[in-house]
Image 1 (cartoon, rainbow, N blue to C red):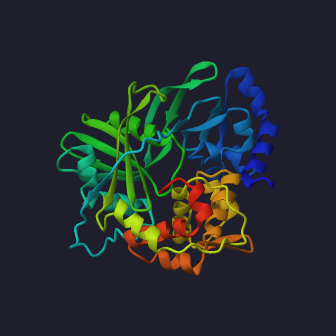
Image 2: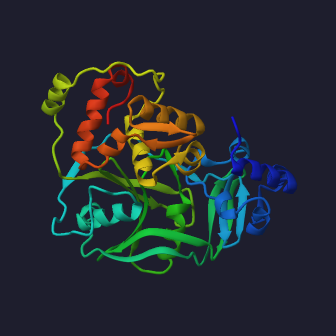
Image 3: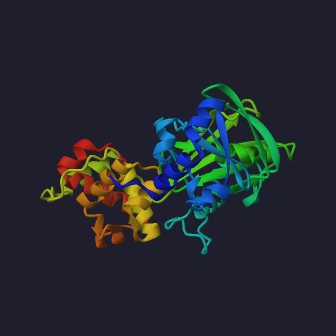
Length: 372
């Protein structure tokens, strides 16, 4: 399996600066963007939103990296990621204000649009239970200066941050709280705590109201919100899940009667020549199709590096999409097929019906995949 550009560049950096040896001896190493830029742009070399994205040398040596300033980083055996819980929770149906013409909840292709839809449909109001929510802060800004403790292989390690760059996808202030939202339009197994913690540290030091970190995931018509709390404001790893809810904008109702009707009417198709895929979550197959619908096309490396897939998962889920006739691979590039494009032009509810039909029509497929 070929190495990624990040893996190759980090191998050179590890060798030049003896990173593993320094970390073993002192517990950490500080490295500048200037040094990283010698081999590849630091912005690309240090963006790891999920554990699966870590370069092999980081993963093999239990290392993580955190920004400490606009041009500085610290590498050590730190616990920087948190795994999402897998609770099965009901979906709450909400209404969308149909007087709006400039915002289309049927065509959400970005985190910003997902947040806007969650706001105007009162999902954020219901979830936060705070009155008079208004958008106040968002975008890139300086972290200001603060320090904190993080779990490491040698106990607590103190990190000093001085004006690092942070980004807030959405900030909504109500009567009682400031709600800081980190949003993703793809499914993942874990997340980088820093994306919640650095904005929390900045704003909890600026205002008197409660600062509430919220993680929003949008995929297949579902808004999944999780609120976290840092039990110790100075401890990176002290976060705990406060609550979570799922919402969907009302369009139609899936019930057992409708699914049974689909089972009775949908014909089993001939098994395709593509080998049966090893994917085990249809939700992630749909999510990959959503990403292709948004981007137009993606290479195997782009899927692996930019989303929470490892190389094997990229193969599993792209093969599942090809097996179902939703995805095609041409000259190493993945795109939606004509049928896949047609499905994504439909309203969300009709799209979900089509996906169910696809599962039902492939008898071997529906035996293996978990339901939507």
